[in-house]
Length: 232
Image (cartoon, rainbow, N blue to C red; front, side, top):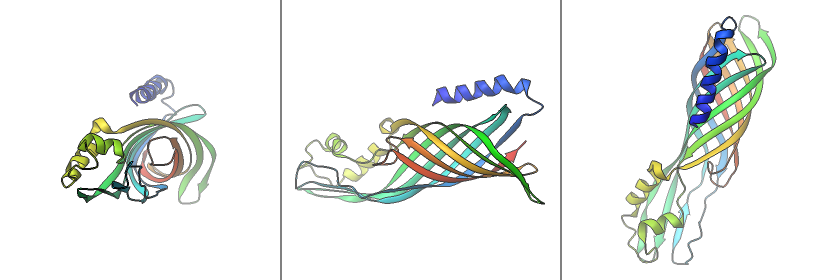
């Protein structure tokens, strides 16, 4: 992730002095919705007396910031940082009893670096200049893990007979520990519609991300983001 940030900053600093007359920089906030479904899952436990259930959840709420630079001929560069999340229930049972149900959070922090190009531009009378653009790039993610038997074995030792009554607190500590987050990289493609009125910038963007270990059970997912910011 640090390499991508350094590359983007280096390109900006290199190009801006020679294109300052035509440079365009924009930044702002974005809200969005992840478009995916995670089914309820029952990881293999190795015993009929042990039950582990991870609940289902649909999509995610997204919140982030973005920055773009239109200072290079033919393409624009942008970087955005997103936090995505939703909640689901975790249940566990062995011969000694039940673990209290945990209403837990699936969460992911992501960085996207994108090169995009204007496809067509036009003006809406009395409203705004409008552009349709498309592009793609690379992304990185830090994601909370989904509970599995390896985690329970590490926490309990004797998974079949250990008392699970206090397991919920230990499991939450494990899943929220940054050392246990899943790291992944991927690629994405996106298309967007941009409205610009004076310095006010608005985008509607659809993006498809291909990356493992982000959405449980899937190597790809879509998202729609709405951006509001300033362009100079």
